Image (tube, rainbow, N blue to C red; front, side, top):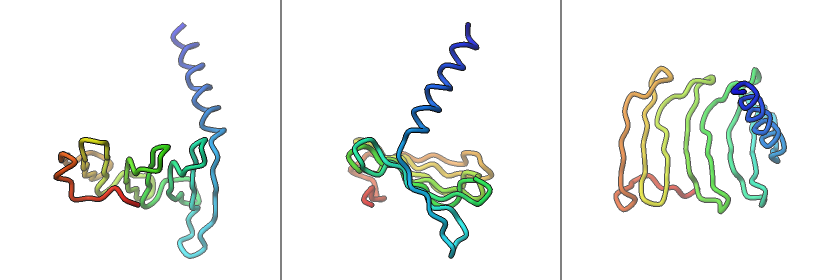
Length: 119
């Protein structure tokens, strides 16, 4: 029974993700595939780039359906790296990654946050 539930959950997730609108474009300068995903309302949900072999590369940004930035992330050849920032209405969380693992976590109240969530 557990296996059936897991398979159904995977299929539902794959189908819903597969229907999300996206744009792909080869960036000849960086030799990366730039991608933009959109929410159902047409607002950008995520931007970033893939290597030609499908690994996440560089800065990835995620936005809510109103266009407010939620996450700023960094990848180096598919590996989480550098500083990641997570915003919500009350808190900014900074996560530092090293060797694909969490090295440090810092949290600030929104009034103290120094990193802007503006585009």
